[in-house]
Amino acid sequence: MSPLAIDAHGLDKWFGEGDARTRALSGVSMQARFGEMLLIVGPSGSGKTTLLSVISGILRPDAGTVLIDGVDLWQQNDDALAEFRLKRIGFVFQDYHLFGRLTTLENVAIPLILKRRDWDDALEQARRWLEVVGLQNRANLPPVKLSGGEQQRVAIARAIVSEPDLLILDEPTASLDGDTGRIIIEFVKHKVLNAQRAIVVVTHDSRIFDYADRILHMEDGQLRSIDDRSGK
Amino acid sequence: MKGILRLAFKLLVNDNAKFTALIIGITFAVFLMVQMTSLFAGILNKSSSTVINIGAKIWVMDPAVQTIASSIGMPDYVLDAVRSIDGVSFAVPLYSGAALVRLRDGTYQAVSVIGLDDTTLYGRPKMKAGRIEDIYAENGFVAIADAEYRKLHSPVLGTDFKLNDHRGVVVGIASVASSGLFGTPTLYTTYTRAIQYVPPTRYTTSYILVEPKSPADVPRIKAAVASLGYVAYTRKEFMQRISRFYKYETGLGTNILLMTLISFIVGLSISGQTFYTFILENLEKFGALKAIGAKRHELIAMILFQATFTALTGYGLGVGLCVGSISLARLRIPDYAAIITYGNLGLAFAMVIVIAALSSYLGVRRVLHIEPFDIFRG
Image (cartoon, rainbow over all chains, first blue to last red; front, top):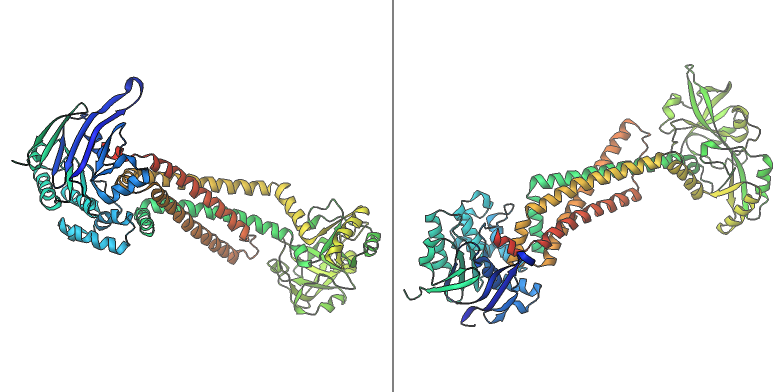
């Protein structure tokens, strides 16, 4: 295993064409280590979601390289990239994106099903992760019957059910009240983060800054500063 | 892939409202398509009922004949000429005409009269009561016990009636494979009696029924008949000619085709629209699946499976509904002209596949265009 979970260099990304062409990322380089929780913060339009998408293999950069545990992400074709995301990266989306027509348990099992695991085995493993996030008694309910905090925990269970090396969280506290947000981020920090995993969080929420090992401040598509809190 | 398809299945059927709307749309379309085409097949079948029932291999007739009922009499020499054609095993005359029967209670009923060759009784029906030989008895007629039989007040052996002021007696009751299109009962008698009882035209032979010595003789017989100024059709060709007449020269075929197309368009509209809405509502979820690691072909497989499952379920229900409705109609109207053929089922199936293909094409296009990045951007 490489000591660096993410090693990105010289990332450039442009959107639009002609006069509307704007630079979303401008020569961004950053690293994330295994065992650390990295926050990417900055005002709206600063490029943090673009950076998150580029380092998680979702949005191809116009220039630069991204190594995930030593693997050059953007040298792979689309199918290989999808396979890589499925096996190595977990996603928690801002709006959760849980399937309302499936049970909570089935939602958690989705990455395992995409990995062609047997249906019953996938549900069994998903059930164990639901227990980890404390929602075993909600397994057969549809997500719409759950509170926002519970839905967020389901989304986290889905993201970690296949035990990825890298966990990506997009504004994980944006839809939650202060206490619930804090509980969620504490859970992520203490129960999900481990020495074999890196967690990258994009957030506006300054209340969770204290949980970060390092904070990357972005502005106008550039990395302005890095706040290392691991030794605090 | 099994788990992924199971996921697709659950996403589809757990959305009760949309799934129900999809199924109803396709069921309704299939029901209409099969019903329309079955009705048409039934009409075509009935229009050729005499050809089916008589069963002759070759029919010789005037070239202007378009349906069995519109026969044009041929002079007697044609029969002799046909008999002399090389390759003809035997040839017999057939009379086919219509008459009015006066029943015992004084009411009149239109009937079809079939006059069989006196010598051979070729094309005789299958007897249910009485003996076919009794057809030679004085005033002897055989009544056909089909759906129209009750219009003759369900006669029994010995029941008499008047046909053009001639006395007729039912000496036998028989069955045939197919009843006629026009809702008239059928009476069989000898050729000689038929042309005596039914007001004849100058020429009395409606058709000449030919038995070739071998199938290889058929082209030669057809050519020889054509040289006489008449036409010889095989049974299949004659039925096709009758079908063509009803399809293209009565407007019936065009109307049925239009109705079938309208059913298809209605089905396509309902199902296509509902399926597309279903995809749109789940678009972000498909985007999330893409982000998580679902590959293009897996997403396509999910959508195709959903569309195919819906189409096949709707098809099965639609066919079942059609079978049920035709069976119910037959209870009330025994002579209800509708036949579900493999052709009807195949046509409806093909149209349902087109509905599924178009619906899934629209869905697949949208799903493949959604970028996982859009999910992050909200």
